[in-house]
Image 1 (cartoon, rainbow, N blue to C red):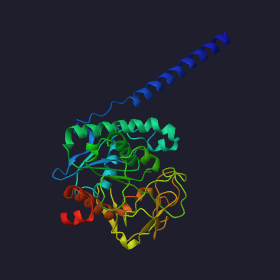
Image 2: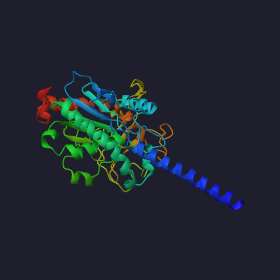
Image 3: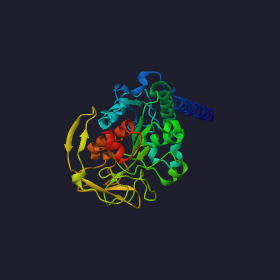
Image 4: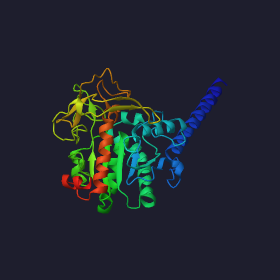
Length: 344
């Protein structure tokens, strides 16, 4: 009798564990097959045609804000969606004076994805990019109407911009509409440029059809999980708009701006910092500031990794540069100093 009771308990326990296992599979499957957002619905856009009277369009892609337990953000997660819009608002002031803005909600990869190997990350980044790509395709077919375009993003958003460049901008007619790509806080490598000739690194402050990319670090930092020590990225200095190692002094910094989640500037500091390009890794090495004054809020980044400040340190210089490149594109069909002078 005792043996039968033990067997019965084992069978019940096994059945219970099986139910839990099946429920886990069903949950995981339902999560990964969450309905794709339909971009004909304005509700699936954080910004939709904001600034309708502008002469150029901005397609803006949010950085990583989701820090939850899943590997991709759910678009039914209202708390994270508020953070998503808040992150975009912190960047919008750089672009909104001269662009009509579009920014899709997308099932972005979670912060925990970056703890995985590069190969393991790709499954979740592909989910994110599938949304971004469909949103961009819908925008092109229904909203763009041949208008000039700026692509912009930070961190994961910059990665998504580069993926759009690879998929769409090999088309010469579409590329001819590209003002610039602000792919900030994500490495753009020489290998990518060789494989995708439409990815053209910026060389100065007014060239168009180009990619602007950089990352901020203290001089002591040797590598991060975003910019590993053995990766060399293209880089342009947003203070002097040079691609060599010529240092930019802090007086060239027209204003570091720190914004809240509504986009309001809460603090502005002219001449906060200078910088120069590290020729070994293609990152910006910052001068005149201390890591203790600008700590990172991202787990896994070392002291002196200024990733979260990439936009903020150069806010006014970037704002001015977006205006300059847009004016160069819209008002002068040939991009040289004489054309710019004649157009002004």
